[in-house]
Length: 255
Ligand code: MG
Image (cartoon, rainbow, N blue to C red; front, side, top):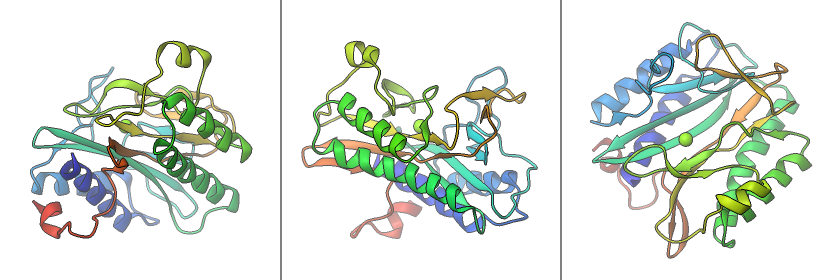
């Protein structure tokens, strides 16, 4: 799974290198598709069934778009924030990660939203090392976001990941009594989950756009999304979609 995770990280670098005013989201997606193809990685997002099959290898969601944004002719502008989410399968194993990029200078409160969302993902990973059950982590995630004056999206959650991108369990970024009662799980070695907080500046409520995929905030305020694929090991959580570490060579990435 680390191979797949490294390639997802590599795809993020492709996107990062292109993010600029004047670039279309479709051009970013095409470059990422080439990156996966050249490395023999199977993109996981393209063709995902829905009212229309998902048409691209990445979800690119701009500003008030929360998740599942469809790449296309939209031109990025200075001050935008761009959530880039993609996944691939390599040798039968999957990786999935997301990151929100600023385009040029962004408003200070929007920068705080991005910091809060990447911060709550980092917090979750830290807590996975010291808590026993996901409900404990999720409760602290929701508090972290609320304390900063933002809201956690509840309509979309993280997931187990392995041979397939979406496996059990569901991994919410908040805790409800119902979750604690019926869906909680232990943070035991062998578990691999995609943790993916989506945080909105205003209301947590989202709506589906007419393209049948893109989810946007109901109030039109911006949203941010950060995700890592994380394995629980005997030595604690390991981020499988992190940047190459010491000892991991370019060959691991290029295959
Ligand atoms: Mg995911």
